[in-house]
Length: 631
Ligand code: ARG
Image (cartoon, rainbow, N blue to C red; front, side, top):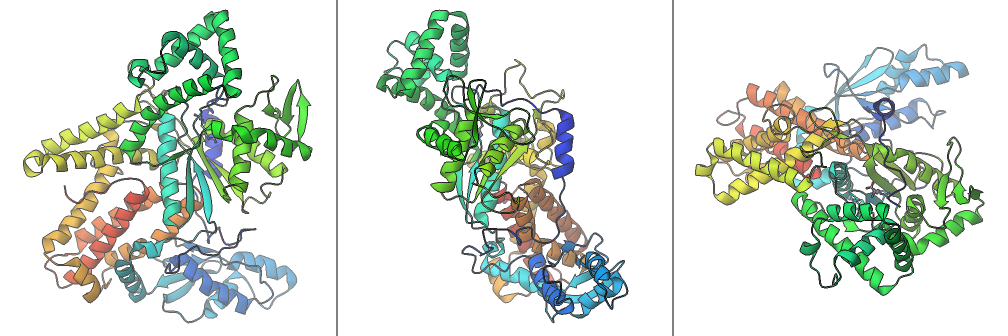
């Protein structure tokens, strides 16, 4: 199953294609509104207020219904104003509405009067301070300063959970990390782990039930050779400790060499596969011992990264494969081709092999079965697969087969559905695939340790060893070091290849975790130094956003729910990174231009500092980064 050539690397040109289709996304109104089967009922988000965009959309929807009663299918198209001079949000319906109604005959004379009418019919609301019309009927909205301030203060009192977006799904599977037993967990798996964990965190924050699945490659013909080699090398393998077996990757290589060079061994290995698949006790035991050794190695990485996953390897789905293939066969989808059983997919030259010529199952049979299982047994509505872009073709074919079987609707926006979250390669500074000097793949644990130790050195250079306890030093170095590795990966559009560079990711300038974590710590220290009890201020103080830079920061803080929603909907964690960075830039501008401690507006400004820190902390949390409070 692992040896089926699904690991090809996609060339740069096709990456670019992917990018232009899927790259930067500026959405209009909530994409979730018009989904099919699953209705947009919020899931236990009783206190959630909904994003600003959503609240404005409701007002515009009312106006649209009142102004154009015959066009009841028109949904409000809301966007953030490109130029904040004109307003905070805009409604962009006028042009397309005009195009629609002019052919039918209308009293309106052009898109601008259409926009004007939409604006005039807006219901009274304390969200909006004023509106204006621009260009061909765009309705610009300036949010009420008072309302922004109150919304933020309410969040400070009720908690940022009240800003969780509402998504139209209850249950999802995030299939991520998924390394292969007895093989190295490489940087690609690190990317999958980091990206998958963030997606899971964002969905969980949005009150979605997430099944975090580690679809490890723990089954397939290679186990015959591994088991035979184990018997040969460690005659008393049952008592042998994992340490004795040592480096599994070397073990894998040695057994592969044996397999390729000794026909006798090869034959025994092939028989071993049959015995294993037949469930023979001795073989099952050897198999699970090999799996256990790998598992311990993987666990070291997960532990360092603070990532939680539930292992459901390929072997788990094995017993369900025959039934699944039978289901597909009954639907008339399975054909015979060159001795194999296949599913032909429109637009694909090569069919999807579901039963190999020798009668064995493969990667695709397992993935089809996993879909069946997740859908029917686990009742997941959205299945998200995080792997390198090289597997895009595989998932396209598997998802297409599931649609043919009627498991997923054809409408891309309808649920249940599956999405492939592809990502590019990790490159070294030489522009080639990231490797260590010995040209071996990089040991992930070493990489994380190095990030941490470099951070520790930097902290010691800044004199922190004298100021802090050893424990504080360790914890901060770890938070910053691991955070830097994660952020350097997440901040890029995932489809691009990214260059792994310690100096860059550990710099305290520019868009790095180090810079952001320090910015957060600085805000915390402003609050500490004021000597005020912030919990008390939240209740008794009043937030006012009189200065332009205060107001801008406030507007951006309020956009947190829609950014998370968009990052979830489009499965793009970089949107959250971009937001976090912008908030910290807004904060810097505010702090440069507005005196906080000792000013007449101290209370209000401390509250704004606190709100910024709360939002930044939530972003860190969603990105799997541990915030630090002092530097
Ligand atoms: N084990 C695979 C690999 O290392 C990734 C598995 C991804 N998940 C899945 N359901 N196919 O490439």
